[in-house]
Amino acid sequence: MTIRRPLLAGIAALLLASAAHAASPAGVSPHAGSVATETALQLPGYDRFDIRAKHRSVLVAGSIWYPAAARTYAVPIGANPVFEGTEALVGAAAQTGRHPLILLSHGSGGNMDGLGWLSSELALRGALVVAVNHPGTTSGDSSPRRTPRIDERAKDLSAALDTILADPTFGPLVDQRRISALGFSLGGTAVLDLVGGHFERAKFRDYCKAFSEQGDCVFFTKGGVDFDRLPQEMEADVRDPRIASVVAVEPGLTDALSEASAKAMTLPMLLVGFGAPDPSRAVDVTASGSNLLDRLSNATYEMIRPAVHFSFLGLCKPDAAKLLREAQDDPVCTDPDGADRRKIHAEVIDSVARFLGLAEPVRAGEAHQ
Image (cartoon, rainbow, N blue to C red):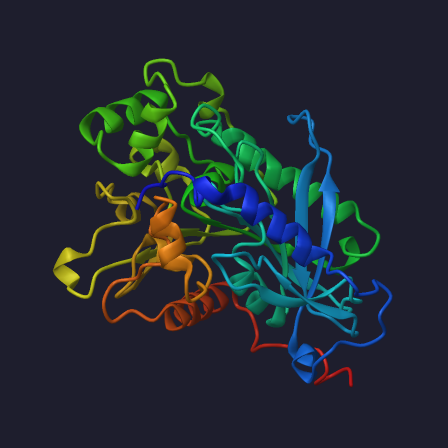
């Protein structure tokens, strides 16, 4: 699948306000010595940090999910009028030892907390999950003009990695032999870029001429993007040699991926796609069928069905679909007949954990009563 237009663009301000409230709940002391419920014993830790990146004029917001070793207070991360939140223990002490690290890149118009359902479960399996809000393509700040700068997204992830490795608390916990990158949609594009993918402007121009009704091309057109004058930086080499493996979930722009760079990418890769109940209607990981799997030398492919592109997003609240219809926004809470988003998420979690060699869930409280 390709990238879609910004997630929840029409109600972004409301979502951001709700997210800020969830991160700092009223009436809860940051020094609370215990959590409200016993379920908090089986929650990951969560914290935020600022990233100073040379390629940005502003600080980049970052977050980290990790195996917790102590109890603080439980907060529903990412909760808003559309999506349910994912509970985590804010600021809890981390479990000691060396942990694999996963860099996480959200989709177009998404944000670092929106994939908490995945980050939390990977953290409970022993991983450190580091995510960022990509300026120019995040909730409330998603611009067609800025979206082609996939090089900036990749650099955000490298800068986040620099920051965590230098952090006195989390840096010593990283197993630097097991650093991976995981991205959804435009985030999938970013992680491919991060490991040597070369996206050609001319190929993307030709793609949008041939598939002008695709969501990404429509989004760019509405923003007045000139496909004959895409930013040169889109083709920059931004590879990070510290990345050992990649998971790309329905990555966008893969029609523009050069054949030479696709062949040269030899790192282990997992591609995840969503399809209709009828296998004959299943498409490759882009809407046009770019045959990405066969173009990569060391990739495996997981097809999950019945599901659609937006099934990767969080669990929706009961009235969310109605709210989105009234806002004339994307149907991000509408799954195909027979689909169960919880089961889809469980399949994704199992596939990613198996590919990355993660252990069974590590629950704070089981080993640290």
